[in-house]
Amino acid sequence: MTAGTGQTIRDRVAQFLKENRSDIERAWAATPVFTARRPADAAEECAELLTGLRHVIETGGEEDPSADGLATVRPVLASLAARSAGGPSGSDRPDVTVLKGPLLRLWREQDLPEDIVHSGDLVLSNVLNTLRIALLEIELSAGAETILAQRAQLTELSTPVIKLWDGILAIPLIGTLDSTRGQVATESLLEQIVAHQARVAILDITGVTAVDTLVAQHLLKTAVAARLMGAECIISGIRPQIAQTMVQLGIDLGEVATRATLADAFARALGIIGLTVRPDERAAG
Amino acid sequence: MTSILTVQQVRINEEIDIVHVRQAVREVAVSIGFSLVEQTKLVTAASELARNTRVHGHGGEARIELEKADDGTTTLRLVFSDKGPGIADVDLALTDGYSSAGGLGLGLSGARRLADEFDLRTAPGEGTTVSVGFRARKPARR
Amino acid sequence: MSATSVVELQDVLLVTIQGELTDEDAMALQEELTTNVARSSARGVLIDVSGLDLVDSFLARTLHDIAGASALLAAETVVVGMRPEVAITLVELGLTLPGLGTALTVADGLDRLNGSARRR
Image 1 (cartoon, each protein chain N blue to C red):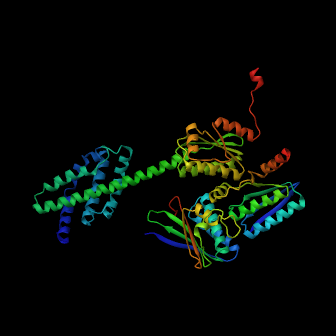
Image 2: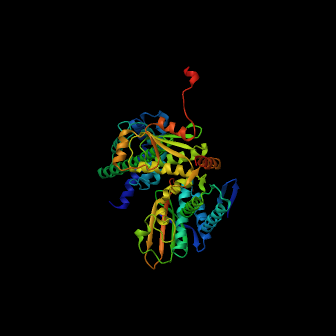
């Protein structure tokens, strides 16, 4: 097929899309992609989609997901992608391939020479495949952004610094400590040490699922940095199986004070700032 | 396309030039939105390497580059070059505690630990070029 | 460029460092302090580094040497007020400054010096 006839076919298909607008839009609005939308919204989205696709075909960009025409339908695609983001990745995801059926049916219903019907079939199929790729790209990037945002939220949520007493802070670490979370935890702990003028900081790892060499190294670095600032660090909540792994890995926490439980660490911390806890004799008597 | 932009060049001859390098690096690091901790790491690495350039390389220059990659990430790179005697034993020079000038011997190895990327080119009699790269965690502000 | 002051508080030397320190400044400080400790027979040296936005290996070595020389002259050295970002960077650099006394504030540092005096 020469470029000339290619363009002729495109013009022919574009003309078909223009002349049969209302039929196509009505057929599309009835597909599962749009049935969940309010009829007015669905009609508007169908019309926009159709105009965009026609523009893509006229300019010969039906195989290019970044074509100009597709840029104009991006808001519609984004709205479709947003609907799929909430649901599972299964059947209720809008699948634009269902738009192909009604479109090809209407195209073939015209009384046209067989070769033109075939060439037009190809153009329409291509443009819808490209549309599907463009939608997938938007869905994927939206997904990636969601994941990034959630990760940032988790990072902040999972590293609270708690004031236990005047001069005593605790940071309960939970879950898996990757390098980003470890860094955020260290930085916020050290900043809070300054803000609260805390002489003791307790790093509680009761909720940490595994301690490998990297995590241990990180705990050690945090403790040393705290000491350089003039605060003492105690690591608490080392569960028996974690203690065993640490020994097997040859991890040595050096001079850093460690305690089995947060309560033990707190008692030690009170000792460091010169306080003791004893029973209230009046209450007991 | 990855684009590299040289933002500043600082000569290193006198001792005060080490301070000038630190200030120039701090300025650029702040302008592209590095956090306080990252700024401090950058400036400290710059201080170590500028001192090496002055003391071991008998002077040279520091170049501050910004590299923008396709994916929108920005890397701040510091390139220190001198025409000094070069380093004969690179492995030894990168060993913690090895010092040929009575320091703590952490200049090169320390700067390497602080940076995300490290590159060292040297040969006896042909000078030394050290470059350290720091990636901005978030896409740089425009 | 840098402002370094040394104040005698009874038997403690309070040193405040601020701004950009050249290597020469650092060496001059070390010499001045050691002379001062010997002359005043001070019992302790408090070095306030809260005004420093950078401690590199040269300055770290200077602090370490000041502490070492002071210890020979029977004075204890406490480094006070190191900023979080400076502390993190020093640790990443591989410098843990073992044996160097530290405190959060000048008040804590004085407490520490007095405490160790009492323990003697």
